[in-house]
Length: 359
Image (cartoon, rainbow, N blue to C red; front, side, top):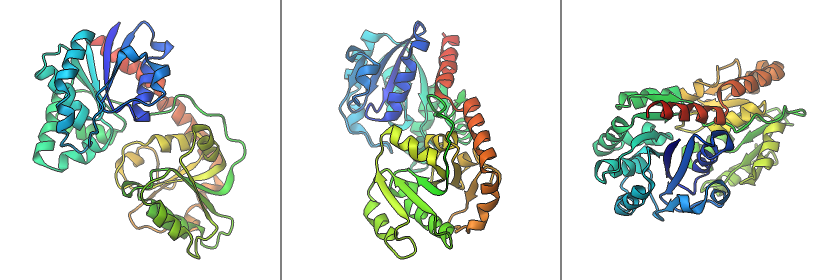
């Protein structure tokens, strides 16, 4: 039985998903789990893990760095960890939580190994912001006995920064959804955050180009963010009026319904690793139209099972016609790929086996 402490943001559904997987009946008898949150905890943690095995530090970390308040919690964290006596500390997001875990071992004397999980910008963006942040990222990666990445591209960057062993698996689905039965061939769906990093304005412009001379084409935009008012103003202009529906943040079952109905899925962020939203869309048989990022090219072969769009590209509907003609076959192949490579419980079981092997 390994004694494992997750360290991350307990108000993130991503950390909740890791907690649920590691505390699942499938891993009973192999893992005893504790979780430390730099902030508080989502309500879902109550069902996933007893309160006595959780610690909320109630800080407000900025994941780009400069988190003096988080580091000031180190004495409290070390006292708590001494009572736990973990075998492994597993920080998620290496710039902030990785630094805290490294400090607990290096400065606090906690006798545990580090298994760090990168989430994206902590590797792809933050190390380039300053020499100090690059040094800090390198220090954390070199201290980890094992690390995880959700894309080959990010794993290569982690190795270049000093990571010794990187396990690569997508932050995938808990289970394969039902086979969709009623696709709307003219329906597009987008559900990334309405913030600049996800470029939702570009989503609207690409859709506007695709739907020209296609009266039936519609776009459903889920999620929310600071750009929503500007996006709604753009969608009210004559070329898009009546074609774009903003539905806000959705419950998982409602979102699954849109995935299942939509033939096309738009995701055009400026920076990303392998996105669980894209994996969900693929599992529901939606054909992805993605920005030209290395991680996206791990999922989509341009013109074969989706489109990879260059910055500023405004594709015509004709680019979709060959994909539409093979849509059913593409959907089946995508579901098979997700089933084979992107189911999260299987990946977490392999992760636990790797930690067990290093005891």
